[in-house]
Amino acid sequence: LRTEYNKAETQLMKYEKQLNDVTAELAKQEEEAKKLGNATREMGDKLQASGAKMKGVGDNMSKFVSGPIAAIGAAATAAFIEVDKSLDSIATTTGATGGELKGLQEVWEDVVRTMPVDIEKASDAVGELNTQFGWTGDKLDEATRLSVQFAEISGSDVVGSVQGAKKALEIFGLEADDYGRLLEIVAKKSQDTGVDTKRMFDAIQKGGPILRDLGVPLEESRPVDLGQRRQDAKRGTEPLPENCPVGRI
Image (tube, rainbow, N blue to C red; front, side, top):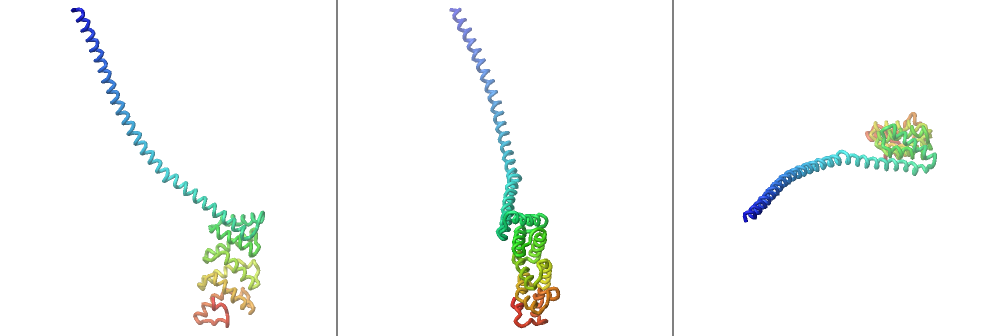
């Protein structure tokens, strides 16, 4: 009986040791789990912080990179459309095709590339000057620059100015080469009298034939003095000729 008791006690001690070993192992695993949990939480916090930083980077990318790039793209698209429209305008106004059209468009390109100018005004000038005078090449280039400068200084319409100058030259029997000089005279008199250039050209068309029939040439009378005569007539310092249309402008 004693022997059986000893065996049972020995077995019990063995179980107790196994139990203690298991308990120790569980405690160790629990400690490892705690460490893992802390590490996981720490990693989560780091990931969350990294995510916030990435979001900040993304926001800055949108604000400082993507936004400006999109704006540049939109501006480039708008500029392309405007250029294409200007080139089409030259073709439509002149009816030119092939090499002739290419030559006109090259004049436009040279003007807008070498002087600060509204590209639509430049295309209007190229198209109307070619239509009215048949100019191409260097002559067209020079006249385009003069016409655009005239329109910008006087605040007038390019097409209307070219047409008005053409009619004025015809009224006084002047050569096309007098185009630049006529624009200069009209601009100067417009500034001196306060009469805008459109009304000045109207005055030339209405009253110019009277001066022409009187044999008064442009060089001596400067028919655009009609604007000044209108101002003088208002002040009573100079009577207008009877039935002179200048008084009605």
